[in-house]
Image (cartoon, rainbow, N blue to C red; front, side):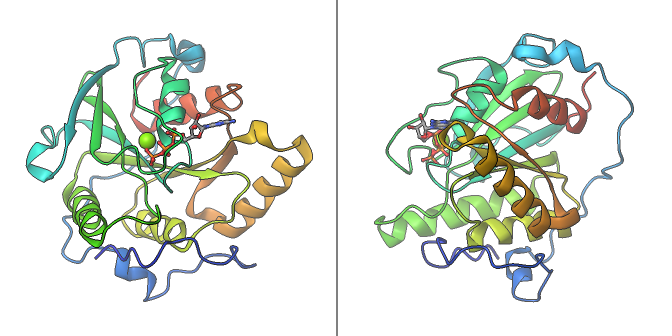
Length: 248
Ligand SMILES: Nc1nc2c(ncn2[C@@H]2O[C@H](COP(=O)(O)OP(=O)(O)OP(=O)(O)O)[C@@H](O)[C@H]2O)c(=O)[nH]1
Ligand SMILES: [Mg+2]
C-alpha cells in the first residue's frame, strides 16, 4: 500500500541511485491489475504543441474533482497524473503547460489541492492534478483520507499512461518522491520529473540539481528543469506529454 510515512521530508537524497528495495515495494499495490502495454510511440509533431496552443491543449477543460474512486471519470483512453510534494508547483505546472492561467487552482498555502482533479483534453485524453503529499500539521484523518484516495487512484487506474513527478529544484527528493518513482518503475509507468521553480536558482545551481537528480534516478525517469513563472522547460514538458498521451 502507499506508505506515506511522516512528513515525507526526510534527509537529503543520499548519493547513489535509487534501488528497488523490498521496503520500496510497500508503495506498490499488490494485486494491481496488469497495466496496459507502454510501448514507445511513433514520431509526433512537436511544433504543434508550442505554447500550449497546439491541438494537444486547444480544447482542454476542467472535467471533475473526485474525493473518492467513485467520483473518477470513466477509466478509458489515456491520462497523465501530476504528483509531488505539497506546494511543489503541480497546479502551476499544469497551468503553464496548457497556457491556461486559472485552470488548476494554485495557492501559497500547502495542501490546496485536496481532491483528484481531472482535465479533459478531448479524444479521451486527460491530465490529472493530484493532491500533494508531505504537508505538515494536518489531522490524521485528513492524511488517512489522502492515503486512501491516492491508493485507489494508483491501484486501479488502467488509463494512467504516465506520471509527472514535480519537485522543487531547491529541495532534496523526499522519501515519498523516491517511493513514487519506484512505484512507477515497477508499474511500467513512464515518469518525467519536473524540477520546478528553476527561476529561483542560478543557471549553475539548476544545472547542478538536474545532474544530481539524473544521477540519482538513473533510468527510472527522465528529468528536466522547469519554471511555471518563466516558462522554462514548458516545451519539453509538452513534448513529453504529447508522446506519452500518444497525441500527434
Ligand atoms: N517562482 C516560482 N513560483 C512557483 C512556481 N511554480 C509554483 N510556484 C508557486 O508555488 C506555490 C505553490 O504552487 P502550486 O502550483 O499551488 O503547488 P501545488 O504543488 O499544486 O500545491 P498543492 O496543491 O498544495 O499540493 C504558489 O505560490 C505558486 O505561485 C515556479 O515555477 N516559480
Ligand atoms: Mg495544487
